[in-house]
Figure 1 (cartoon, rainbow, N blue to C red):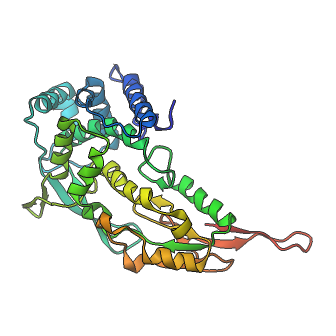
Figure 2 (tube, helix red, strand yellow; figure 1 turned 180 degrees about the vertical axis):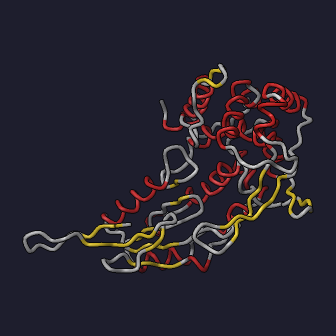
Figure 3 (tube, helix red, strand yellow; figure 1 turned 30 degrees about the vertical axis):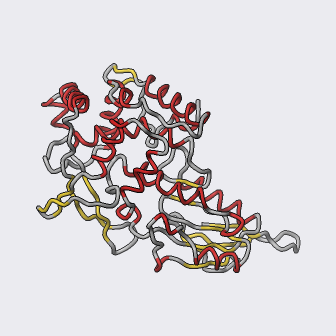
Length: 341
């Protein structure tokens, strides 16, 4: 089994209401292997896979497990399951997708507190029906792009979470990279240019039906305080497809970054720490954290250089403080330094 066959949330019981889901994993594995074998291939026959019944069922399973609040139509998962009917919903969505009449409803925009801060994060809550449509697209596209993603990226990827990212930083500190440029992308999810994002998607996908669906998702309206808006940038935070699209776009950063010049990038979502071998290398990396053609900016208030020394201030990643410490010496010998949380 390849690394990507466990989906981002491993949505996976093998059978839900007697509908087998083994075929979905086999589909993802086939797409991953095909993309891995031919890095230049553009996929033109994906629409039939998005519409597969087992893929739609997998989408419903994911929506049900993630639960979540209703969208602007106030339709709940419980009501669909108990009153409306899952099969009825999936039949309707399949029909709308096939005949081209599907249109996403405006997402409900709410503010939620940012953990550990006094700030607020804008969250988009799509209607249940739109969550169910977004997931098949993610199921089909994720393995194709996963075959391309760089080893330095973590977060929103199968088996590449916080602990795996931290281990890279630990290893790099042991290799002598003790200067860390700490930064992240300002308003990353909402600032991504949609036209450039679609250009990145089209590097691997040329199925026009899939591309139309992706554009419809990105351009879907949002409702905030009773007012409907149509954002022309970003991939709304809180939507199913958003993490994958963010990773697809930021992969462009990883493709052009020169490790010898700017240090080792360890990206977790939009956090971008870069361990460097010297203060000079770190200063250069701090000056040029993002390529200009991404049209994204670093968060200046959170951009700084930290030297990792025992007893020093350390840095936060991803959301946890880390500092250099020294182990107790033995028989008069000086203890070794290590990165501790």
